[in-house]
Amino acid sequence: MSDLPRLSVYFDGSCPLCRREIALYQRNRLAHQLAWVDVSQGPEVCDLGEGLSCTQAMARFHVRDAQGRLFSGAAGFSQLWRVLPGWRWLGWLSAWPPLSWGFEGLYRVFLPLRPHLQKGLRRWSGEAAS
Picture 1 (cartoon, rainbow, N blue to C red):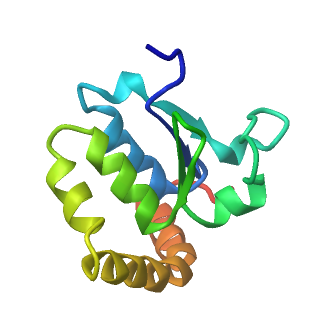
Picture 2 (picture 1 turned 30 degrees about the horizontal axis):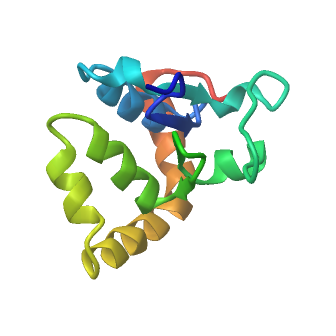
């Protein structure tokens, strides 16, 4: 058995939406088998490994599997969902073409909206913008 986590999950901890979603996944009974990396802490705090810069990780969701393969966007979510009980069905469904293309398309539509949603959520929750 490898000492590597099943997945390393790179997330933007400065994003209130991202924090809430990651907290949901971290409550899963197998979440302790994953490495949760808050990339908002900066590159000096976290080693993101080959092929992933802090800027890239802040702009898009990424996961890295135990074999070192990097998955981005909807493919990253699909990988995450497949290892978490209760989410596996969505992980397999989202990996199946043509649905995988649809999931990626929706993710790409969400990305430019994310800053506006973050701002609104910060305002609603009373959280100061960082």
